[in-house]
Image (cartoon, rainbow, N blue to C red; front, top):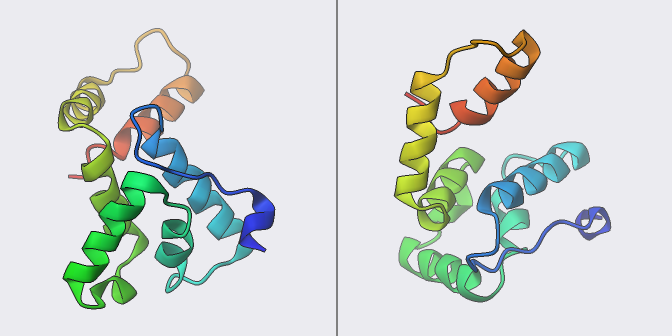
Length: 121
């Protein structure tokens, strides 16, 4: 059933968008009602190439710890691996400097939400 929703594939290539991959997988998981215990398994099933090797190395090194890995833990680890630190720092700085200014409240709320994920503290 998961494949019926056409989940994205992520290979880890520079052209791949890690944020879009995570967001689309998360949306499908929520829509299907996948239990929190299986979110990571379904998502990692969509990894290919270098990203699959990254995950396989993690699994081999972790001694079954991934079974208890939460979505938040996985997505944080995934983003650290596939979104450059300088880009995450830029987004965090944008969030910290965000002001409504001349944009509407709705536009501000959307921008705020999109940047807030990069400044969890």
